[in-house]
Each structure stands twice: as C-alpha cells, then as structure tokens.
Length: 301
Image (cartoon, rainbow, N blue to C red):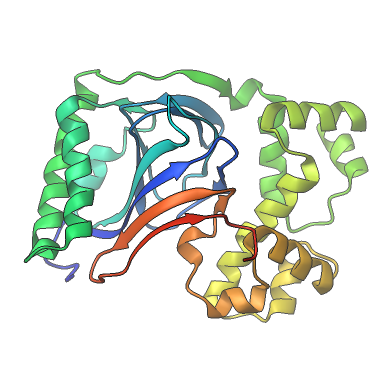
C-alpha cells in the first residue's frame, strides 16, 4: 500500500479469544496506533499509570509511545473474551491532532461496533481492491469514533490511579531503572518501604512479583534491541540489566518461548507481548496468510 496516497496505513488486524489467564505485558509501540474493541466479556486495560475495567462494546485507543497492558480477562458466558485489535499508522497531521485528546475508553454505539468488525472482515476476505477500500473505511470509522467521543458517549471505570498507587510508583521506578543492578534492598531504600511490605504492595497491585515484572520489562526492551540488529546478544543482555548471558537466555526463552538468537531470526515480533493462551485469527494487509490457531506464548511445542 502506498503510504503517500492514504491518510492511514493499516498494519495488522486480529480477532482474539483471551482466556482468564491470558495477559498482554506492559509495552509500547514507537510510531503506530492501536485500537482494542472488546466485543464481549471484560478485562483490565492499563494506560500509563491508570487501569480501566472495560466491558463489551467498549473501545480503547492507544497512541504511539504509550505504555499499555491488558490483564484480568473475565469471559461473559463463553470460554474466552472476544477482542478485536487493529494497528495502523496515521499520515495526516490533522487527523492525528483530532485523536490527541482521546486517552480513555470510549463506549461505542451499535453502528460503530458493526463498522469496526466490518473492517476486520474486509481485511480477512481480501476481495478485489480491498487494499484501496480499507484505508477509506478506517478513516470514516475514526471520524465516527471521534464524533461519539465528542458527544460524551464514553463510559469509563477507573480501578487504579498511578499518583496514589504504591504499585504504580514501584512499577514506574522499575521502568526507568531496569537496566541497572536493582536489588530488593536498594528498591526498598529508594521507595522508603520495608522489603516485605514492598513485595506485598507490588503483588497486590499487579498480581506479579517484583522479579517477574522486572524480567518482563527487561525482556521487552531486549526484544526491541534484538530486532534493531545493531547489537550482539551479549551486548543486549548487558544493556537490559542481566549480569549473565546464560541467565538472560533462560529468562528470554521462558518468556518468549525461543532463545534470543532464534527470536532475532524469526518473524514473531507481532505476538511477542502475549502471555498465556489465546485463540488468534490475524491478518496483515498485502498477504493472504491468516492464522486461526490456539496459541500459547511462552510455551514450547
């Protein structure tokens, strides 16, 4: 698709069925947008330091370079939570500015939801001229989305706010210092908590241990560095705070499912942030390759 001819360039679309144990770890996209549409069920969506509980019929827009994650899926009368996802570039500055103020979930109308699903189905069916039609369909949909937002048809439910959440403070600290030697003693001193209280606060607020979160954020940055191809595996290990390349290889394989060298040679970056099982039906523009498979990231088969 010629990016100079369209206001929008669609990268990837997916319809996923997330189980209750599934989650998407905290991560960022440097230069493209992502939209989540929760068709049914519910889940907790983190954006920067705020977590929202989203339920069926709600949309969540993620801007470039915004930290986001998804967890605590609760199916509604089904085995999984049905979520549509779309990633795209915006090449129109005016359109980007229109979206700039939307940083909370938006409750969609029936028409908005149906049109979003239609865009996914068009991409999967790949009928004649679908590549030419899709950008125009998405632009029209985004303006409808903005109109719904401006008419105050959004419904949000905050479950945690970063400025008053100890877990968010700890998480932000780890996000900034992950490349350093972070011992529990140092963390407790810098956060002004006892070690036991610190660990309890973090686990209650995130459902993870400090070590689990620190390893995940380190592996996230390691994946990014590996894909840039400028550094050796050993250099990436050191840059991400691992003292031993052997430990780095072990943690990386446990998290992603394959060693870092194999990851660099593979084409799995699009699913690298998933943890736990998911039923995925995904498609990229310009190809006929569609994946409809139960997928369990972090597990070897």
